[in-house]
Image (cartoon, rainbow, N blue to C red):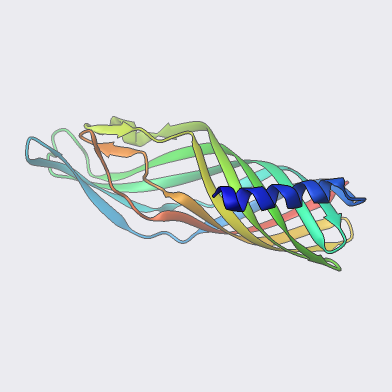
Length: 211
């Protein structure tokens, strides 16, 4: 990892030090997830209490600011976006007196900080880079389930590949996002990790306005 970070830092510092064009603007984006169905069982004293299945994610909506710095045919971009999305889970109860079968949801608001670096040619941009995320708020109906614990970290990471195009002051891009952690990474059932493996993968479209 250190062998990768060092040259990246040198490139970033080189771009920042050049006589480059800097654009600041606002943008909004919508993301669509490709969800994979997964099911896990919650047990207690060798009894199966319920089955929890990840059923999908709502669209991811984001709004925020970006800074784009272009030097020749190289660009560096950083954004700060506030995002909101929902996850839903189907619950199948095996002890109907205590747990009702149905669908439970959770709503999450987080701060996304994607960093892109790549090639710029005329009005086009092709970049790749990491995305840092910090959970600002979570409201989850899963907390009503017995044996359920949320041990998820508020901080997570992923990466983006982005293709952008500028039409005068109008900024657009289409990006592919992949999280390094599974969507159910913080779900524990009866003090055991739930074991959900599917990662959050999204196709995002953004449009913005440069000042």
